[in-house]
Length: 90
Image 1 (cartoon, one colour):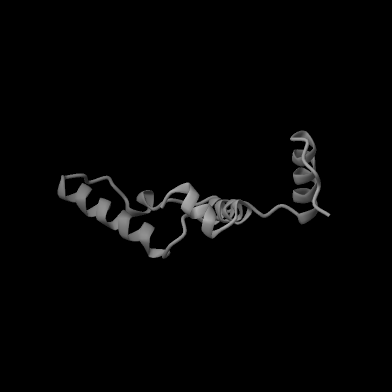
Image 2 (tube, rainbow, N blue to C red):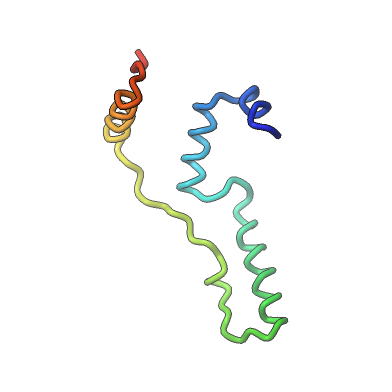
């Protein structure tokens, strides 16, 4: 899908929200995808003779920092809007 096709279906604001969500929770999709990929890599490495590889090291740990307070997010958004000479939403 091209960028134009995607933006014809969802707004750029919604796309940005999904990107932010994905940064915190990890890629969209089933939770087991990461585990399945790690298992595949684990078995391949073992088959190639690796004795030190651990499955836990192959599963990515996603950034799950505590969410900012909404007031802080609003303040940052207002500062960015002002920096780019935009109009605040009313």
